[in-house]
Image (tube, rainbow, N blue to C red):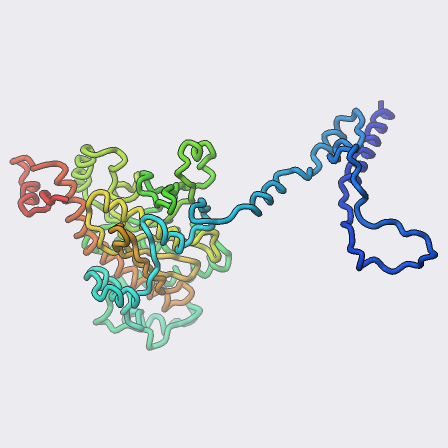
Length: 477
């Protein structure tokens, strides 16, 4: 038995060696100009290059190599590469096809210029170009833009000056005297400054650690961004708000998806792999795209407002029962700030993801007849660098609604102490705007629409009757 096993192994090795020799690439035929001169009286040289093909032999190497009855050799030989494999087929298909606007786009190839040809269209413009073309911007847009751009050069509250200057060894880049903001210009309550200082210092240290360790996006979001927003949630703003993780939330329903130039729509999913070929075959007008945004800030509604929304939702289709562009757990959360986190050199463009997410919000407003002119701010966080954007609705050709994208503008950086305080300053402005201007818009437009869906209130409901008399419930869209 041992002799037979040894023979079988030897035969198997011999068959594999023959198969490998048969697959060995041969040199291509050389041009005659490269052949060296030879002596006419000398021997005839052996012709160089590939010998003529014998039509009687099969071109497939699996037919040229004799195989024994050894199953292991057969299995090994059958796994050798073939000249007619998928690789050559893909190369042929790529060489004879051209890219057009009618061709479907993949996640990696969707960019802002392409979104400019979609519906709704998204166009990047500088603030100066928008002012020059439209002369006068809507007041909410101009006010928010001015507040975010015209911040003081010194942003560290002056009451913290003594603590920072007396202990410069605690930070890599201790602040200078010129970095401190006078008390009368400080936008925070003085009693909250000690806790805020501890938080900002901790964020700078944690961001440095994340950068050195090349931390994942979720680590950046859960520590640097999450800690800051979680702390600000306890501040006495005009209305409470929530920090929501929406990385598993898609734009729903499909009618809110961006429409490509050929009329087909994009699918927004939390995972590209979850969109199978069968689903694509069922609806050839849909194309899979990865999820859009990681985090958002949204108003925290009271029980009365949520009850009114639920009653209004009973009068419309189930796919419309949301105050934003998603039917997930955030469907009753009024979003006023979108946040996308990315590491350096991301696989997908964070600006494209924010633009598509904002397009879904715009279509949601237009669908229900809510005023779409309110600006939609957004933030990208790429490592230490924070940037802010603003999406402004506009009408394009054929009176179709689209978006102007302003940005990116520097919001600050967690690589330095002063940069981190600039982030806190601007984030505080955005939260104040969301809990005041956006909150008023939501009450007038969305809650007014919800009360209108419910009809006139009962005579015994004095609180509802008062709102109805003021016109909030009877607003007709």
